[in-house]
Image 1 (cartoon, rainbow, N blue to C red):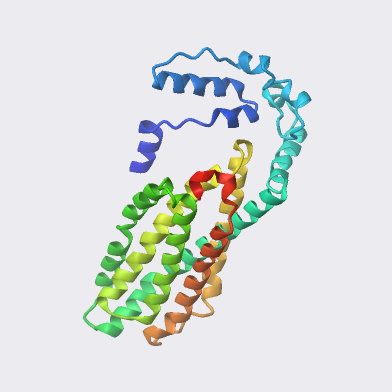
Image 2: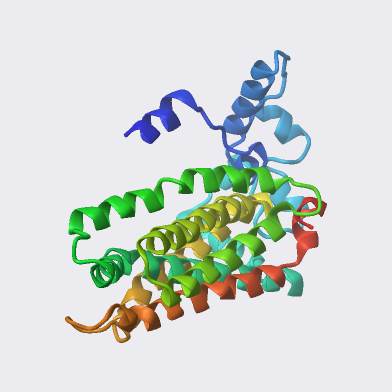
Length: 299
């Protein structure tokens, strides 16, 4: 609830004017420019008519070779069929060149591995902690297990902040921040499978979630940057779809590796190896991303 209130009543985010223009919402694009000018204590005389006069509005669809630039009032007055065909053109842009196809496929694979890994780890974490803690000491109660669960997740806030700092760090940037954090995610899961003590059960899971938060903070912020403004929403939505789809499927697959009741804590290791191995896939896919498509800051 607190996040909801902050998002809608304190932080009044504005949409990209370029995106609004490509969606044919010239009036709203002008309003955003006026909002920016007001924030910076400047004046802005741009109106929807200004966009029309320079060819970004109704004439854009006639003069531009780009299939998706419907433009201004003409795009807003298009039929449902025309709008549907225009949306299909947006998806085609995801594969409009070899470089764009490479970028799109690698981002999809990154989201799939990311969601797969942390969903499996998070879904089975309370059960695995309970099994490991009970094998360490019978005095470690279920209450202790869930208290540990809270300790593991709280430092994730710091992980997000560290991801933000690494975002524009020279010689590191978005790409290598994601490589480092995803590698540490996978390593922490493998280490968790090999040791069992009260300290390691909390510390290694804390490590995993810390770097998971760091990785996702950069991934979610970087993905829109990688694409042209007109298709950012489409690109991010499709990538998230594949991630969440495999986030649903992954626990069902891991269930085949999960031990039955009464099995020792080590019987859960195959589940952890699955989560860690798939998570390390993020290291490979992010390393192969075409850095030049997101500017020099990503190098």
